[in-house]
Amino acid sequence: MKQKRFILQESEIPKQWYNIQAEMPNKPMPMLAPNGQPVTVDDLCHVFSRGASEQELNTTDAWIDIPEEVRQFYAYYRCTPLVRAYGLEEALGTPAHIYFKNESVNPLGSHKINSALPQMYFFKKEGITNVTTETGAGQWGAALSYAAKLFGIEAAVYQVKISYEQKPYRRSIMQTFGALVTPSPSMSTRAGKDILTKDPNHQGSLGTAISEAVELAVTTPNCRYSLGSVLNHVSLHQTVIGLEAEKQMEMAGEYPDVVIACFGGGSNFSGIAYPFMRHNFSGERHTRFIAAEPANCPKLTRGEFHYDFGDESGMTPLIPMFTLGHNFRPANIHAGGLRYHGAGTIVSQLLKDKQLEAVDIDQIESFDAGTLFARAEGIIPAPESNHAIAATIREALKCKETGEKKTILFNLSGHGLIDMSAYDQYLAGNLVDAAIDDDVIARNLKEIHEQIKF
Picture 1: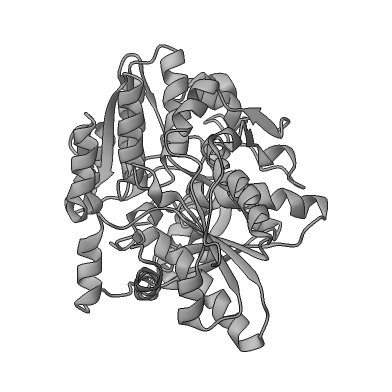
Picture 2 (picture 1 turned 90 degrees about the vertical axis):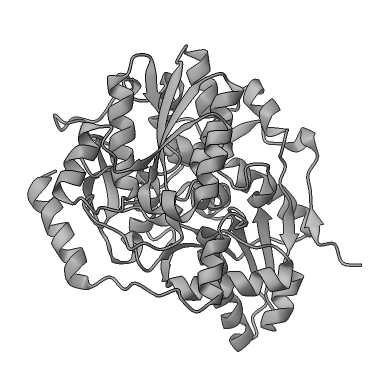
């Protein structure tokens, strides 16, 4: 019988994270403080933990030790399986070999816990008692709420309003773990009040939720902010995914020709891709890397590289990123975790350097792909993960046309069992694709050109 699942032993859980910043051919440009100077660790410590801030700016150490306490928590759910998708291969009639790293099997249902644990570890070590964050679909908020409870830290989560309404059970999960959950934009912060004053019907974005969470963090004693994507230290923590997958692909006797993940801010893409990408840098391999983003929020495929704020109100440092403009309002698609206007500094630099490719996926195509995968493999994917599956199917069908026997690896970043209302709408034929006009993107980019001169 063919082996379908490849699982490592607890002793094989990575002992170090991989820091791609140390080995990139061109290092990312620095984040800038309001005075135009590169941010320092001390600057970041006003908002983040010192441990995370040091990791954020570390461009010299390729390997960073995972604290033993964090690794012990990782052992509760890692290593996650690598799975050969025989059912999907058969359904597509492709000669390609398709593998997926199944991050959906941990108790929190997505990859986000990989960074929530070390971030809460640093807060606890530094005596922080309260943490704030934002969340879109709720995977990050759920992971952070659980990790905060493990370390005895109080959590306040601003959830994007449209997702707060679309996904009530993720809100319930966060509340079950003891977090205070507020739909964003809200009237509880100055940033939220300003946004609602301009547009009382604003349905929120990750940019609005970040503004509120950062404001609460900097105005509350002994409170800090935690982020689930975009920044370098988050990408670092997620590399446990790809480091495990490397070993598991070796167990399977194959190496990926193509690595694919969905893309919002970059957390799960970086997690699966960066460990494999280092072999491209050295010339050992020539793997392609594909970031699959929603066509409704296409910062990589239709955005522009520019310094921009990470939030709508301009409270963050200026980040060098591919962006649609921090005032961009994404359509109310169900892939709430991908509705973010910009990309992280590392991914942005790698895209500039043509070390990766980007594709955009319409909402209906993504659910077509996710439903086919569910029927072939018995796993209902998160709407975000459906974008990676759609990109994988595109590549597999190209192999069918050409007869090439490529090996494709994608990251199944989370399950969709709390997203069934989205599937209900899809199955009823009520989902729509929300195209973004070029003039809307141009108008937003013009605003940041006028506002930000760096």
